[in-house]
Structures are given as structure tokens and as C-alpha cells.
Length: 145
Length: 418
Image (cartoon, rainbow over all chains, first blue to last red; front, side):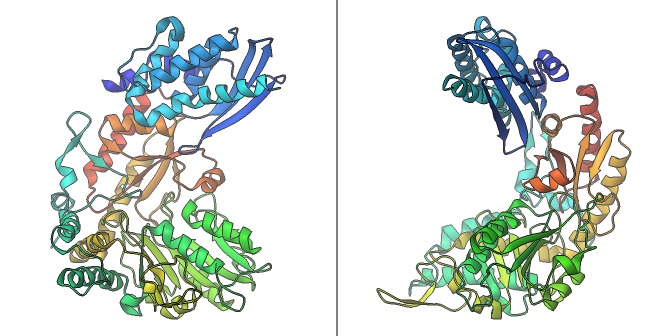
């Protein structure tokens, strides 16, 4: 069933048990992004130690794809340098643009390759990218502090 | 002739296809846009094949035929709405959103002394259940003119709260813009009382009839509103064609919105005067084939009888509501009884996000709308960030309703009742 390629177990796990949810009161920058077509919302904040992501926390509401995606993203990016993070973000964005032709680079994306199925559902790509776009925004803002 | 959704479906080519690996198309999103009967599709393409020329602009045969076809569409709309002043009261736009913006911008263009001119101290009244298309044009007109925006609230069961009607429609009120039937709740609003109060204070009533004209017989004279808008594409017709109806006397007083060709009477380098209504509001070459297609769509509905269409939808909605209320952990957003409601049913299921529910239903061949349905303030009021909406039309039947109910219960299993 094609639906199972979208709702992989690891995605539903992150949706039911979100990681790093709950905003850290100390941060260098914080942003709120919405998906205007569906009302999904994510607030994301970041704290840097030199150029290492020390803390990346979020709060929000939305569909399983948007919420699981930001949860998995925070798992992946915490402890990485901003440069390493940008490589991961680029890899994830390319996976989402692949229209189902790519399975993703597991060495870079780890569990997030589970989202490869999402790229076959054009209506859901924006959901999976919501948190990642917020990260791009918040990381730029934190660096310009 | 008895009403048969199965027979009607045969008139709609799209129901000849399947979706998601051979599944029957269960189309429950007519509130967003309706499917089209072959007669409307062919009327539109026949215009291009046989009669295409710029209406109102040529002396040759094709131009005459194009003009007749376009004006024929206008006459059909006037009859369909029982417009008291006939076809001159029908203005074609690109959609209902443009019709509402036309009104708001035209009012914004009104010079001091014109009855539509708004200023600080004047009031525009809307409701909390408006589609963005009947909220934002008025909200922004208020910002531009200094007028005040006021609104009717919505009760927990999805009805307009009219308890303060005399205060909300104050003596300063110039415009009352209201939906006839909510695109989220399905609620059909009680117009008589509101229209009477608006007229008592000298306000004009603008009716967003996008969700009523496609579904029920409309007698504009009986509704006693001053302007009415609807969309062609929700009424079995093509996209790119919408309607603004207004009382002739008011349309005469209303300044134009879009300027250009064919809306003028005379032009010099420094001065212009306007053509009579409706041309005053139709600048540029219009969407002719779409007006013709809409005419064919309305003829299709008239042949079936709007009373029959409405009765079918009411009976089906009652059937669907009863079945849905038996699903555990479902919350209906809007009236749960059939008193003054149409065939739009919005709901949430457990904590399953509507996008996820919609995606699951899609895997079963069921097309529903998910999100805030372009009525974000209403979603906030009802305390649901998003919902799932099923909207019924003449081609739906009990099979479609059963498929939805089964699909919801299957989704509960799939997502482990999150």
C-alpha cells in the first residue's frame, strides 16, 4: 500500500513521541513559521556555542508529517556545527524535491530518510519542510546576532 | 421523474475514471469546486470551436454570434436567480472573490456625497463565519476609509449569534456582508431578520451565495438583499466566471472598479464617462466561453429542478450526519441537526490531524477538504486549528456517505487512534 511509504513507523513514532518539544527559555534566536494553506505552526529556537548547535527546541501543532519532521530534524542537528547542519538541510531539501526518485543518503540523513516517501505526495512536501525552513531562518538570525 | 444520483453521475465524464489504483471516485469536495456535466464542458468548447470572436466589438457574423452567446449566458443567470431587474443586473466577473472585491473597491472609489462613500464613524458588518473572500475585502476597506468593522459572533453549535443585532447593525452601518450558507459549518443563515434590520438603518446587504446558489432555488426578490455573488465553478460551470447581481438602481450609483475598454460611454484625453450597467463593470474582453458554459450548467440544474437538487442533498445530509454521529470520538463542527443547514459537514476525529485523515481517505479514493477552509477566524472561534470537510452535491449518494464513514473508521485503526 502506497500510504505505508508515507507513514513509515519511525515517522509515526516521532509524531507520538516528539523529541526536543518544549521551548528552551534561553536562546540566541527564535522564529515562528506557519503553513498558510493548512494552519500548521512551528516555533523553533536555537542556542549556539561558537558555531555548534547547543540547543534546538520547538513547539507547534500540525499533521504527523510536519511534527515528526521537525522532531527528527532537532535530533539530527543538535551537536552539529552550522556547516554540518547546512549539509544535512541541503540533503533533506534535495530528497523532498526528488518526486520519489531518491531514497536519500542514510549517512547524512539517518532516520530522516523515512521521509523519502513524502516526496511522492506533492501536497505533503510543504508539511515536511516546515521545520527545516524554520531552521534555515533561525540559524541565519542567530549568526547575525 | 425521480431524482437519481446514479443517472446524474453518467452526465459527468469525470465519474468515468477511477483514482488511486482503480478505486471509485468518491468526490466530497464540491464546496471547493463542483464537477462538470458534459453539456457545460461542450458548451464551452463549442464556443471556441464555432463562435469565437470578441463580444460587443465587431460587425461580422462571428462577433454577433459571440455577443449573442455571451449575453445568452447573462440572461440564463438572471432567470436562474429570478433577478427582478432582468439581465442588466447581472455582472460577470472572474469568480465570487472578484465580485466581492469589485464591490469593496467600487465603494472605496465613491466620492463624498455618493451613497456608497464610507468615512470615519461609518460601520461595515460581517460575521465570524465568513470565508476570507467576504472578510478581508471589507476589513481592508475599513482600514482604507476609516470605517469601523463589526461582526456577528458564532455560537458553539455553529449558528450566528444575533442576540445583539440592533447594536451590531447600528444606525451608522452602511454595509452588511454575510454568507448565505457557511462553507465550513453548513449553517444556513436566517436572512429575513438581518435584512430587515439593515434596511431599517439604510445599509445595503451583500450576500455571499457561493454555497447556496449551487444547491437551492434562489428568488432574489424574496431574499430582499441588495447584492449577491456566486461562483460559476461551484455551480457545475467552468472556472474563470463569477457573478455579481445588484439592484439596478444601486449598480447605477456604484462607481466602476476596473477601467478600460467597453466600460466607457465616451473618452477624451482628460475625461471619460461610463457605459450603462452592466457594461460599466465589465472592462476588457470578458470570459465569454465561460459565461456560455455557466449558462449550460445552470440549464442543466434547472432541468433537474433546484427543489429536487436541494431535497436530495438534505436527505443525504441527514443520512450522513446520523451515520457520522455513531462514530466514536468524532466531533462535528457545526449544527448536528437538519434545522437550517445544507450539505457541508466539517469534523475532527480523535487527535488525527485533518491532513493525515485526508491523506488516508485519499488512499480509499475519497476526496475531502482539509485545513481551515479559508475561514481562519472561524476555526479559531470553534477552537479547531484545522478540520476535515465533506461537502455533498447532486451526484453524491449513500454509497459515498458510507465510504466516508467506513474510511474514517479505518483511519482510526490505521493511526492507532492517536
